[in-house]
Image 1 (cartoon, rainbow, N blue to C red):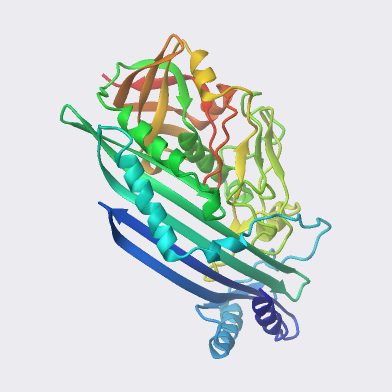
Image 2: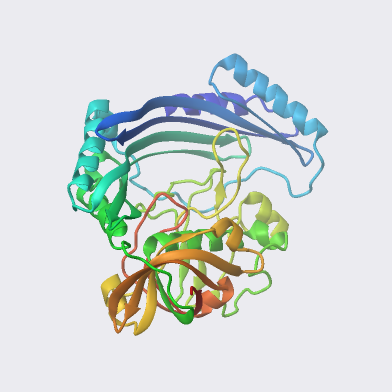
Amino acid sequence: MDDLEIIAEKIVSQAMPGEEVEAFVAWDEETSIRIYNGAIENLSKSQSSGVGIRIVNNHRQGFAWAGTLDPSAIEFAITEARDNASFATEDEYLGLGTPDDVAPKDLDLWRDDLSSHSTDEKVSLALDLESTVKNSDKRIKSVESANYGDVSSMATVFTNTGMKASYRQTFSFISAHAIAVENDETQTGGGYSVGRTISELNLDKAASDATKRATRLLGASKPPSARMTVLFDPQVTTTLLAIISGTLSGEAVIKGRSLFAGRLNEQVASPMVSLVDDPTNPFAFGASVFDAEGYASRSNSLIAEGILQGFLYDTYSARRAGVRTTASAVRGGFSSTPGVGARALYLTPGTKSQPELIESIENGVLVQNISGVHSGVNPISGDFSVGAEGLLIKSGKLGSPVKEFTIASSLQRMLQEVVAVGNDVEWIPSVAAGVSLVVEGISLSGI
């Protein structure tokens, strides 16, 4: 980390009169292992480092990056960024951030012991996962893949406008995709476990989830069309919240691409819905001490008991909107400039578990998977129509498995018709956490 800070400080020190200079310096190390049929199908371990440089001069921004920390490459990137700024279009809102009064939280996101585990240990864990899934149920005929992965990353953001931030984190996961067969019918299902180091991973949970999600859909058929209550599984809710997160971006509002534009302080959802983006939550895998511009992370309430509270902003979108940044700058790495986005979105949980929610539903469906999200959901209009599979719910009990049906509504209506939120919050590698979610009055199109 000290080396990254030294490099960043040196870059910033080369600012010319009138220039605002930002250095984003990053390093990461990754391991990826894929097991198939008791053997290693793929194993890779890599390190990468680089720097992204932004220069703003007279409200013109230039950017360049180098995929190495070699001094000569960095010097060339500085020259390129300066040259790019000279040809850029002037924009009165362009400019780097300046320090505010929010102090950084002390977040425990790094595990020293991750680096102490050998590659052989990691391979063994993936092999054990595959074996456990295969032996979990006689209907499991094979495992499409068993995987292990981890990432250790560090980053530093320095500017000559006063921003100085450094942060680091580790992450590891295991996952398996099982194939179940019965009466010549095949179904698949996946399971996973995530943590910040190997000791935080739960092999039995990952194996059990993969087995359950594959076997319980055996015998699935197309259901009759109806209007009914839908219970979204946490993994599905994660996808829904990720879509909604884009509509809560201040940038989307400014561009007229948000279904929430002009609705501040209005009732946009059921009173059961309280939505927060909190990257200071150490359980979130999008958590970070700072955002991508160097601002201390903070909790942002977006919807409180159904009332729209606000949007997410980085420095640029906040200036355009005439508000303060919410420290919601994100970036894909040193090769990109920052933009605005959610990092740790979650619904305030309720009090009931998924089995208890099932007991409360007379006629409905538990949706385990959805498909066609990119083509079937319009985040601007809110139109929602996706393929789904899951299990019917009759008189408070899970019933027959169903597949090849469509659920249709709109994001606006679905938010208004939430009647229950589960207590089973699941933090996974996404911008949003999962939780069981009960929504009434959704159209189901089947037979």
